[in-house]
Amino acid sequence: MLLNLVLLFILYKILDYVIRIPFISDVDRKKIMVTGCDSGFGRLFAIRMANKGVTVFASCMTDDGKKQLEQSSTNIKAFIMDITDVDSVQKAYEFVTGHLASNEGLWGIMNNAGCMQQIPGPLEWQSGEEFKRVLTVNVVGHHNVTKTFLPLVKMTRGRLAFTSSIAARLPEPLLTLYAASKHAIDGYVSCIR
Image (cartoon, rainbow, N blue to C red):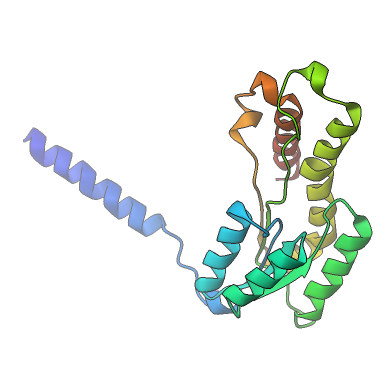
């Protein structure tokens, strides 16, 4: 009897999971933007989404990163953007809207660009300039992108996604600047939900 109950419970959980999996129709007509695509998670995410048929607007910091991404898929529209520079973000917005129909928006934005502090170590080793650099990239840059592109996301009732770090919740004493910036972006995201 107990075995039957356990099996019934497992079957229920499997069916519940399958029913809750969202079915996304017309994936090949969806368009997203991903920041920080030169390497790492941003690059992998952009390629994976492009391989699923999504059109990906992929921002890079370097020409080399842009060229490599453009060669990886015809669904990737790569461009150069410095998220800390409002003019660069505005040019990126113009690039993206230039590839969208007049009534078309973005299905989502993956705010992935970020940086680590240059020298992990105690607070005494960290300069104010380095702290400003880390905060500007990891927090202000995400704000620049989000605020500029938000109208395109609202058009489709799309989603904003942000890459943070476990350092926001479990700070490491030698990564003070990085942890503070990731904690700040977590707070930012909580407020704009």
